[in-house]
Image 1 (tube, helix red, strand yellow):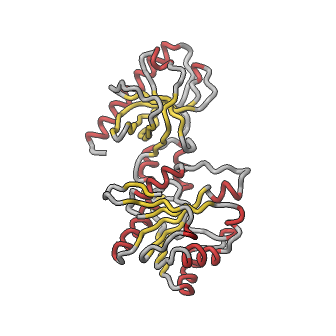
Image 2 (cartoon, helix red, strand yellow; image 1 turned 120 degrees about the vertical axis):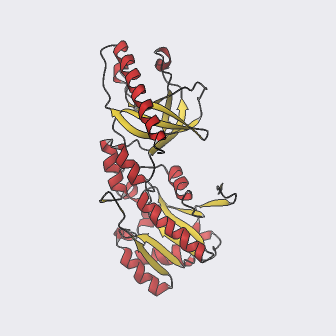
Image 3 (cartoon, rainbow, N blue to C red; image 1 turned 60 degrees about the horizontal axis):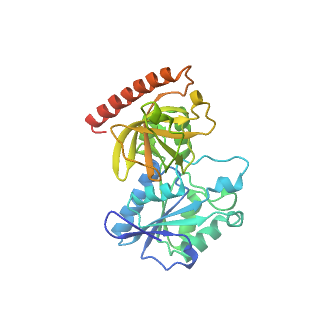
Length: 322
């Protein structure tokens, strides 16, 4: 299914690669790409660069659902991005196509060599594969970067290994991003991802309590796992392509006895009706943890304080060009 790209052409999401027509001179990267962090971006930058140099096709080969959710269903893995967001982030790097391979128990039994032969050599006709140094694939994850290089010699493609990539001496990985996200250190998260952590979702009707206390909020049902600690954040909200500054609460609303985890975003100087719209909330800074207030009046005072802090912080960032 094609998606429009910023160059006016089309980008492709390919779900049935075994029956798909061949691409000219394919350059491919394989992996889960959860987060599409700066390490992934460097790999995909090289895929695009290499493909363009050969008049070829830059492709991403990824898996859905995440293999660990299939192989270890008793230990759910929280994902940084939904599939839709992951595909979108891949396309921003300039790749032409994202191949989404359905990951099943049966697929997991393919050996590393059978996977490469069937899906990359025979189906795609791959000419070059660029991978992260810690990639694993095939049954029992026995395929490693060196396996791919050896299989390249056997099947006639070139293998190239990237990484590790470091930011502030920290090695970048999806696991590292999840760990830092759980602490709420959004500045470090932004550096690891190369952009602020963001969550998309549709605005649904809430209890409309914010309206009654002077802070109307958009209540979001997020599409992806919410990896943040509960609390209040300075945010920027993408409303139809316009970034609107605001403040958001992630959590259960303990002052009102809430029991469902939500994102409630208050957009500064904004009054349009957002019900049913799809918004993307970027989390810039964690201002404080969630707390229960003894009275509504004290909650209102705190929200005023939070909103002022968020305004000041977002404004100073803008002035610094961030």
